[in-house]
Image 1 (cartoon, one colour):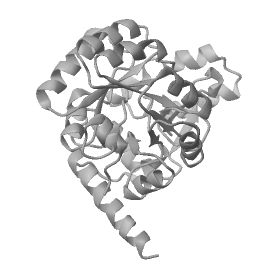
Image 2 (cartoon, rainbow, N blue to C red; image 1 turned 90 degrees about the horizontal axis):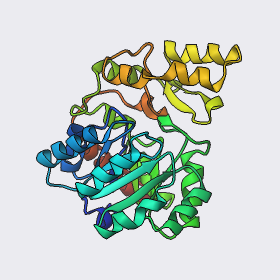
Image 3 (cartoon, helix red, strand yellow; image 1 turned 45 degrees about the horizontal axis):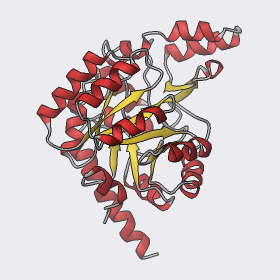
Image 4 (cartoon, rainbow, N blue to C red; image 1 turned 60 degrees about the vertical axis):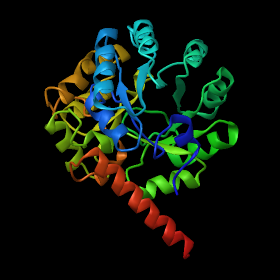
Length: 312
């Protein structure tokens, strides 16, 4: 029922992609999602190439299914990471924070699919001209770095503007969201926050519990002044950002306050002063369970929703 162009393009069972979250999306999580029929993604973030290469080698030992690497194009190590991903013949790359255009042809030569994350119609159209295989239209409901448009507004406009497959992201955590994305014209979905609470995710339990305890208004967008706003769980760090804003802090002040905060949350478990990046669907996540169960539950619910719609 849910076989789409994305399944054929990426050779996966379900059109479900796991977000490439820095520090969170390790080989263990990526392999678990891929083994469950989706597309697992390693998050390169600002990590050096050797770290990324080791994660790639690790995931290859954990699964024989397709997987991908998310490359942040603003990383100081981006050229070396690109080289490592190329040499390791990674099946899929997703990209963020920049234009992957100059790398598209080299990856196409080895059959790697290139799928950038886009927050607007203009960037989606530009990416199509660059020759990418698909785009991920990500709404502001998502965790981490966000744009301004909501998923429900962004996705159909991108779908209408390009002739390549569109994957919806932001605010999706269950079968209802999955079906909604398909109804908007998307050929698949990308989810991040719910996979943080997968058993296989190596993020600290404090990070996971912060998401589970969050309600519908449990997140806030910080750092708009920097030009790179970030959605995080409301905590003491979020209040520090608020104080900084009210006191007229500069973009440099924001950057200084935020340095290393994501690692401290994910690795060290500092859910108070760490940057607990999570989306607005945090209030829908209430348990930790295997990645396979997350996907299975989502597909079962989506099938039930589709059956219900047939009877309306």
